[in-house]
Image 1 (cartoon, rainbow, N blue to C red):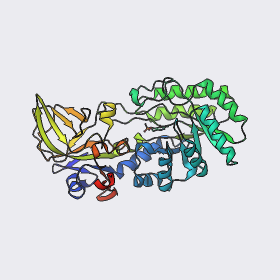
Image 2 (image 1 turned 30 degrees about the vertical axis):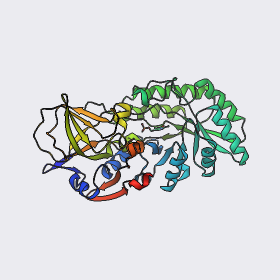
Image 3 (image 1 turned 90 degrees about the horizontal axis):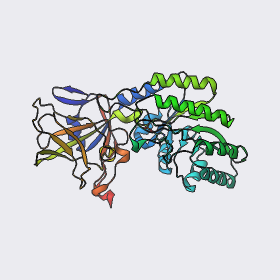
Image 4 (image 1 turned 135 degrees about the vertical axis):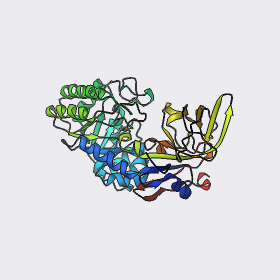
Length: 404
Ligand SMILES: *Cc1c(COP(=O)(O)O)cnc(C)c1O
């Protein structure tokens, strides 16, 4: 983030000017960062040209998905709604994979009708349901099975998905049983083994372990998988001391794996593509002192951005106008919602704040707007995209009348 004459800039635009036009709270995305993330991701794995399916649940803004699609990305969807918005964004159905533990028959029917690349099933019951629907439609449907590799991804427990106590995927025994079942079926074509360890993973070692488990399971299954879907989960640096995910080591491990197994690789990244491109601009409504704490009450709240309340995650906060006067107080940044978890962060050293000051919450591009709600009957914020010195409105702020 850069300041020019004490003014915070997003690309070449003063945040102060965004507020004049769009008010607060407003989500703002940097196109330049999006492009950098996409190109870096592609470059990291260019030796085996994977199919990259952007995880729509990390950010479901239609216009942003359209931009991501232009780089050749497909989509990883987890509901009929996400499938619908991916198709609306113009993503080729042959680049769409459908994940999730509880797909309804309606969702499965829709996915089959839209001829998507893969339905990644997460239980034997789901495989049987897909087969039943495929049979009634006289079709052969391409499926994957999600293996639960029982690996600790060393991330927050709320966003870990690859341990045996998690609800995701099937254990090896069930996996092998489904492989046998599918090989006898006339209506399902088992093309893919999928895995997804969890999210915000900063260590490459769990992925190396995962590839070893895949190697072992594939050997036992004696089945040729046209696709290996490795999921997403690569973490980003929210805080200065976060280590950086080592893409090069992950890439090397995959290359070793591909020497033994001739499959096409699919990735489903979300956070690593959009996490650091987003800023939530907010205004201080009131400042009040209770006991020893100074509460900075913002006009953004947990309904706009839920990660801190949901996971206790910490996001950088920056002033829109730099003052160079440090406050002696401890500031607790909170929203107006009637919940004590409606709190963003507590900071000991921050510039002195006044009511009506503008602030920016950083790295909110992933699991920001997509997790937002209308709790407390609060309309959802506006979303804008910055490209150089251009500002493009990509979603209108909800109106109060939209809520009724
Ligand atoms: C959430 C999810 C992803 C994306 O995870 P990120 O951590 O955002 O990269 C990918 N695949 C599946 C199956 C998911 O549930």
